Image 1: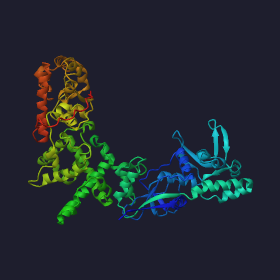
Image 2: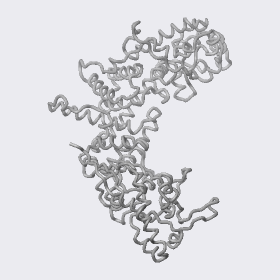
Image 3: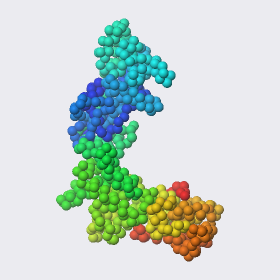
Image 4: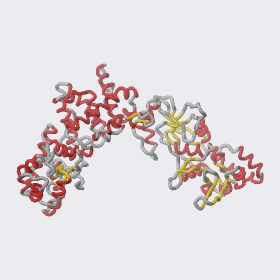
Length: 614
């Protein structure tokens, strides 16, 4: 059964229904008015009976319920709030512009060619309009809010239409009289009846084109689902900024009297803090988006439904799938939001605790924001149990498999839904299999050779693992993790300096690898410069503010998984092989599985961008 009808409707009827409030906007439609040049082109197209595109409307009263508002410039009488019969999904800009130009006595809110907001009245120069279709564009005259056309930076008035008699005298017809010109015609007859015959020719050739104009209308029936409405809207809204799931859900909840935007961002007028303020205070949660939060809610809601379906004995497709996909987020009922929102907020805060315990402190080295969603949802069900060693170890192993296996890049809606189910089952059910992410994760030794910038999740993860191993700064001697917390300008830098490597004819793809990089402070990096390790180690050791022995310095190097003998001897090749093996051992420990080299027949991995970070 078709979910839409296609017909044609008179332009005048559409605009009348807009003024009556029968046609309004869903609140997710952004306020928008075309600029002056677009408006004039639109008027010319109708005057020449050219197509201006179809309009798409949604019949109200169905499951797709949204907060509604009138088109810009339309005001209803005090206390009157007409019930909309249809909502505009496509054609807002055209209908808004035409309503303001053709049906309202107030100036049109628009923009000039420089993007500045201006107010305009639109007129048609009758004689130019009658000169032929090629002159129609020139016949449309925009004037300012005082109905004057000015030149010389506004100093000179070249056309004054500020009074009805001046309109008659200049023989300029106001566009807001196009659909009903009775009053203007009577005034013209009384002012100068000699012009009336010419005017009637204008009415026949130009005004009737507007009055007889039929607009193609596609009307979605009220039975159309909310998910389908939102999908259709985004398909046809190619000229605007794509709407986020958050904006669409906000419009849906507003119909039930709940302001999702205030709940997330807060309300300055009521001085009510938003939910996001709690996240913004935590560096690792600072970049959480409202869509991330809604995905977490969808996971919790559908997981609860799935458990209920299974308990009721349902099987197969009758069982609700756990999902964070767009269509399921859009269908999230307000009751589910109210049930889970506070618990999920706490779940994200627990996720922050978990990540800090795993060694993360700076958001710039957080591998995947998307991985926070299933962690937070799992925390809701685990509560404080996640601190129990066995559970925490499983949680950590799953997390690091996702990071080092680089499994959370791109679209991850399916993965996070599976991971939530698999992870909770693995934790709570004896004999349950490992989560899909743990099984699928793999790390090949050759991957270390291609990790060169922090664009990779594995690169960021290894940085944190080195800190967690207790790495200490070459100069400050303090633990890197403590310096990182205190924002001491840390980053990953070369161990064998770039300049030295180039002098030794070592390839950039080799010396820029993470195997030859480690977290150190800006102070240590400056002392390293382009020197050979044997030289810069002695300089740091003997610095007046350091003063350490070779043995103490060797212990610091070991915290970075660096073999001191090989570094002091400037043996790059031996150092590289030794450190690569040490990094692999740390990776294996984090993932809880062996790192296996690819078979000789396996396809080679694509090299990363060799742009080097310093």
